[in-house]
Image 1 (tube, helix red, strand yellow):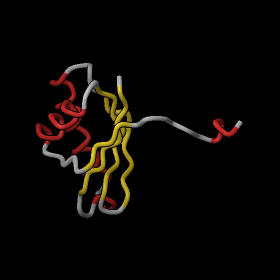
Image 2 (cartoon, one colour):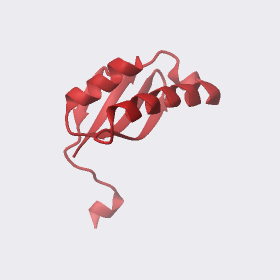
Image 3 (cartoon, rainbow, N blue to C red):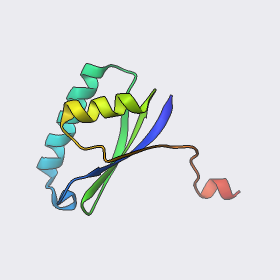
Image 4 (cartoon, helix red, strand yellow):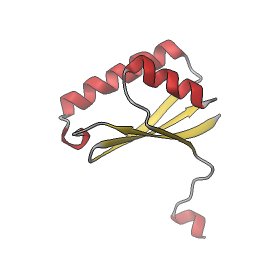
Length: 90
């Protein structure tokens, strides 16, 4: 499976309350359960006016379908080619 980074432009995202984040997470999970096990949401980062999500899916098209069904924008979808961290340095 491929890993994707999705950039979602959501004005005021960084000011969303815990309850609002819980609500939109629930919407996302509901759509994911309808789409099946081929698409997985790993986690998201909320920063400023954007939400950056990490997903595993077989195709960009399935990511776009999730975005359409959930009502969340998927402004930029980028396939992850590698993951590095401090361990990579040796």
